[in-house]
Length: 132
Image 1 (tube, rainbow, N blue to C red):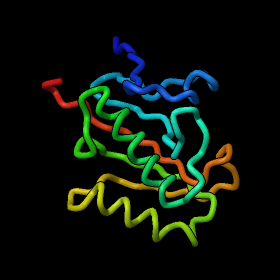
Image 2 (cartoon, helix red, strand yellow):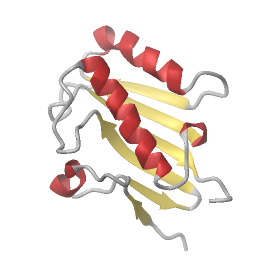
Image 3 (cartoon, one colour):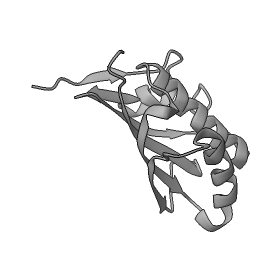
Image 4 (cartoon, rainbow, N blue to C red):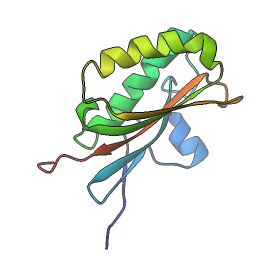
């Protein structure tokens, strides 16, 4: 029977407590990371869009690291965008820095109308390295 273990980054964000969810769940050799947004430590959105995207990736990296994973362990990505047509260039620039070479993770991008005050969200599934 697989167990579930809640994972939180060292500097827990106020959003986890305020909305009652875990940053990630480790189960069966995989890490299921909740959608990460460009939130400051108090849970408020970073107002500048490019900075918000970078902060979302930084928050994602902190959550991955809390279970001994890195961007190299990411196998599946889902992103949510409030204005995909106008935001995609900024998002792709950051994505290309984080995932610079193949094999790239699978990726699904979804346009949405609301993200609780944010304009970008990223959730991933990562493999947990066997030595961790």
